[in-house]
Image (cartoon, rainbow, N blue to C red; front, side):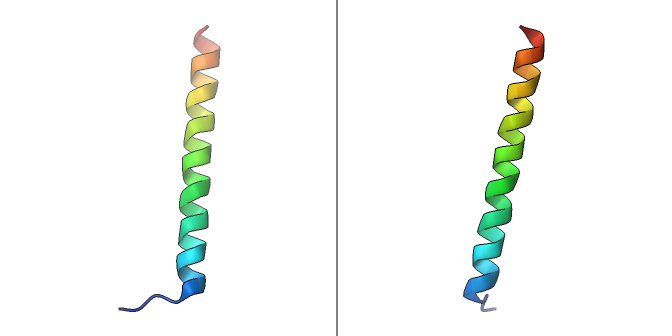
Length: 34
């Protein structure tokens, strides 16, 4: 199965977004506790 370069870029972009949102949510939780 060969993925097109565009699909790989899109997947990397979405995965990066997911990680950023995850870290942001964790940061919000930490801030609320202190």
